Image 1 (tube, protein in one colour):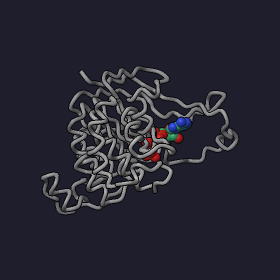
Image 2 (cartoon, rainbow, N blue to C red):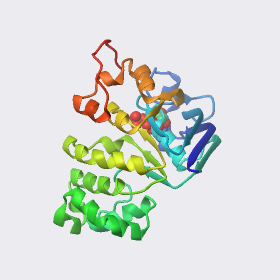
Image 3 (cartoon, rainbow, N blue to C red):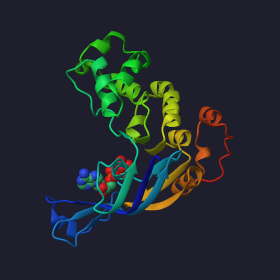
Amino acid sequence: MTSIEVRNAYVDFPIFDAKSRSLKKKVLGKVGGRIGTESKVPVIEALHDITLSVRSGDRVGLVGHNGAGKSTLLRLLSGIYEPTRGTALIDGRVAPVFDLGVGMDQEISGYENIMVRGLYLGMTRKQMEKRVDDIAEFTELGDYLSMPLRTYSTGMRVRLALGVVTSIDPEILLLDEGIGAVDARFLNKARDRLVDLVKRSGLLVFASHQDDLLLELCTSAVWMDEGRMKMHGSLREVLKAYKGKDPYENISPQTAARLGVEKPVSASKGGE
Ligand SMILES: Nc1ncnc2c1ncn2[C@@H]1O[C@H](COP(=O)(O)OP(=O)(O)OP(=O)(O)O)[C@@H](O)[C@H]1O
């Protein structure tokens, strides 16, 4: 069965070229994992004693401040990082969607990039051949699909990458928030495809700062803080604790309608 089991896992990054004198001054920072200065070189404790079990059907959101450890945790769950201590057992085919640009080649055409990126995400050539027309239509890139990628604007690249990403059939889908960083009109168009993609996926872990997208794609959540799991529970409860207010207070009427929930009347003033 598709699953990920993480037990007492730590991820440390030793930093060999840090300016250790200024580290001794201990400037109090609000973001990032703890920096240990006991050993010869400073060590960033990006993940600290993580125990997490994700199974088929789970849709987990990762929330937390900048540097809290969300991306590092995604990389641990994908097998890209090995834990420094502890274990991470991954059972299933992983599609890591961290950076929309990864696996894209500047010198080959949009069509060719669709194939290459699909293979990188675990699809076969045959599967991608069947999907290429659908992806091409979604991107609205027309004749540009025959041009080399270097001729594309940033937004055009995002369209291409999102088209491919939302066409795959992953067992384990790991999404980093970059996916949300596209213009609102195109995101609207991509949203349905993203929702379908998540439905097709065995399990999802999604790191994001955007409540709307989290509410749409996830049911449970983990709140990361200084590399530790501060809370694990239903998405609504975790967002409530993290933000200090009910996430449904902030969502747009359109999102409320899509989610089939009633937007509660704003009761408290909170904030990150
Ligand atoms: N390759 C690396 N080398 C050294 N330190 C790293 C590396 N990657 C992450 N870190 C550190 O690990 C900690 C966690 O970073 P991570 O990128 O996982 O945070 P995040 O929660 O995804 O943040 P954001 O919301 O800003 O993307 C930070 O203190 C960061 O400085």
